[in-house]
Length: 448
RNA sequence: GUCCCCUUCGUCUAGAGGCCUAGGACAUUACCCUUUCACGGUAGUAACACGGGUUCGAAUCCCGUAGGGGACGCCA
Image 1: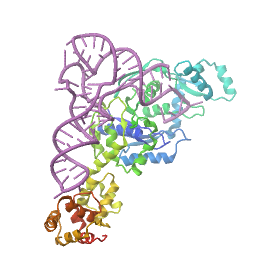
Image 2 (image 1 turned 30 degrees about the vertical axis):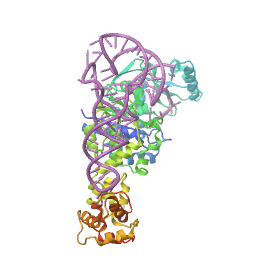
Image 3 (image 1 turned 90 degrees about the vertical axis):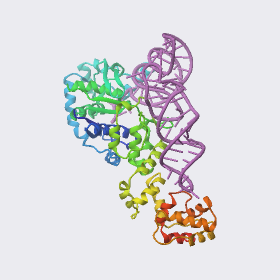
Image 4 (image 1 turned 120 degrees about the vertical axis):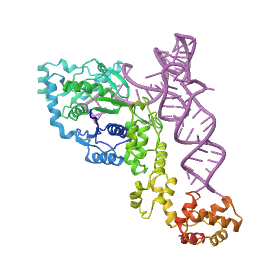
């Protein structure tokens, strides 16, 4: 069986860590099973959806490497939703309701006040044709509810196992609004039927929707409903903010403000809340190969930005030069080569940190000088000719002989003079890159 | 209020009645390596939410309590 999965974000905001986790799981599952991954924009709400957010969603997914095999938008399919609604009217599974928002609010409050679940009382079902005609004569327009079958809705969830959800605890869902706009619950099912969606992987905030949508699905088609997988929602490390509201943790801000590598986000999200160790991975293919619903736990994992930062550094430490060559060039480091990258990468936390070491190698550096006499002596011991990986040791050996200094007293003044940093990559690698001319200038106290 | 999911080291988790004096990873501490920092290596600290029950035996099964997350919209 071909695997067809989709994500259906609504372009009313930026993608955040919760959305992306769902997107990633769907993508990895499709990739692992040779299936298709679809991007479908839930944009039926014309007042809140914007082309800018739609573009941002596509940009973020592309940046993460979560590319889609097919694309759709619900706003193109309103005629289809209307058509399906008609068939449901004919089969008697939807019914017209005329309550106003205020009336419904009041009903809910009353129920809650009496300790009852706020479930729609189906009052509209008792309306006669005459009642309806009189309401419409007064200018009221109906919204349409789907009549649930009050039995347990059962499905085998790929993560939660066998589920039996009591439909009696759920209100008959509104499928189409008074103004004729079809709602997510309904569009989603029609799309999934038409798109031949085989698996729906989403957050557990959708469990109730699933119960409803399985019944809607069965009312529309004889084809079996998709297989569902509901993953626990993640919470932030302080345990207060929920994934739906992690607004500051938009993918865009991680990319643009925190300079996080896409594979750091992918690696963390793919492993968080699973029995596997959170570890850096360089490709989505590796993550796809390791993907397994059985490894996903049922409890709520905490998302920690510090963990993301540390994983980001680890990713960079193992990133091969070829993967960053273009980006280094774009940052103005034209001569940066593999040797430089391999030396510098172990000392960076975000990619732009590499500029610091590029400056050490190319200048300008203002030397930090505490004892110019010592540096002059050191300079006089400098070997000439071609420098290589052994030059540092030869040189410092001579300086040691000459001055009697050793250990930190010997090395730190040289490091500070040549790099202006107390820490950094090993000097034996840096020295040949700095070169003889700049070394002599720096030892003489001149910026170079 | 009703319904759904959950509760093991700081964090993510392994654990399906005896293999558990509870294992791993990240973080942390010490040491080694590096005459710096990082990387790497070795070792260590550190947890079964609480209370009852079932059982020869419970992290594991049952009940209760507490706590966390989610749902209950003419949002998605």
